[in-house]
Image (cartoon, rainbow, N blue to C red):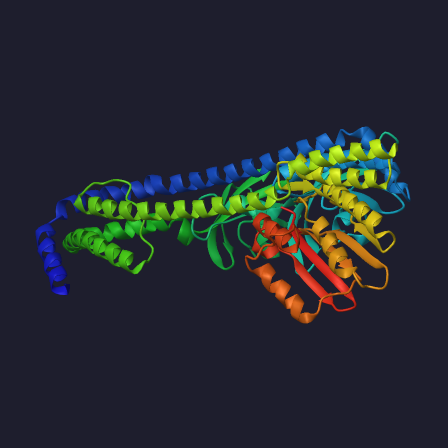
Length: 589
């Protein structure tokens, strides 16, 4: 095989090796003239255009922020209401309605615009409270992670004004390291109808701006940065460690294009002023990188003029090697396919016999890959069907109709409503709940209401043998959860924790809100589960085991995994004679 390849290479090289002296001499002379007259000027203009485009993009973002700022500031009456609420010790129901409306005003743009990290509204008050889009609403300044923005308010003590400040927000997360976020805070002070000052603070994540800068085409070593008049770098595409002298020199330069040393390296600096926000946009490029192409072309032209014979040989060698590489690539594709290794991209154009062969080979393997995708899609549909089957266990229409008949029959026999009617009503509510929504996800408000109907039925049955306590974070009722995920957990506590207990069973349901997930736990002080049985239950929860005789823990665990993923099933902790705790982690997104 090696001798065959070598013979092919030598034969093609001998055919292509011909003199190219005259064309090289003519083109070389013209190239030197064009490089010095045109190329350098064109490179400078293109870099100025790039910087101007960046300035327009960034100002467009902050102009949009100003529009959002003005929209929020237009809510004059809501600001007066907010000031009153910030001063109150406790809020009434009407206050919560007003607060929800104002909260929605700042939440909507914060969610809709990816570059907005958070929005704060602060009106001077004795309790040091403010409204934020990152939590449930009103928070105390002393209880909030981000407080450095408060110092920025001292810049304006009266009147309406707009200014910016670069800050670093340290956000504390549960079970995760602290998160540092660099932001540019856009402040707007507003005068309320009663003469008091209010502030709107929009925090822009500089990572978004950096990504925006990095998405543009740039030269090797090119740095783009934005500074304010105080020599502070607001954001840049790469960390630029400027000395105080370098920053002053850049700001004081009166030219759009200047040359200076940055980091002991000669660089060309492009500068554009932004009077609107008092910023200056810079693009710094090492001269060795900026004019790399002209220098290389000049050197190449000189080499071509002096070494035309060698160049002719190199070109002939290159063309021969190219043809040889195409043949070799076909062999490599076949070898990779045989070994199951990744294949190259499909050629865009079929221009010769080599690309035709490669096109045919890759098309064949792409069809095989497509079949694999179809199989994966079928597997997904089977998983969705399995979820539907589990859900269908909860929809017995005929039971609901039968219960209605029994309910009226009991009333007709007893001549008045009684406990049986109450049990039938609660059971009817449970069935109606399971039949009401086609989707498998419901809001917590409905899920809790359904679960309480189930608890009321069991209280009639067991009298005063158990009690259920609820501890839910504010706002949890608006989050979504898999339908019928709480009731089976309480049913498990009653069935396995109450019989033979000898004391009153207490069941506590806790629902907590965290930044990335909801944490739901059902705790009882029942009989508990011994270690061997607990390990057996955990093993079955990790396997594909499902309960066929009733909707219990296994069924609930399976529905949670099918909805949120295998990592979001049930976790169980238990100790004999102490009780049992069953927990669920529900991702917020």
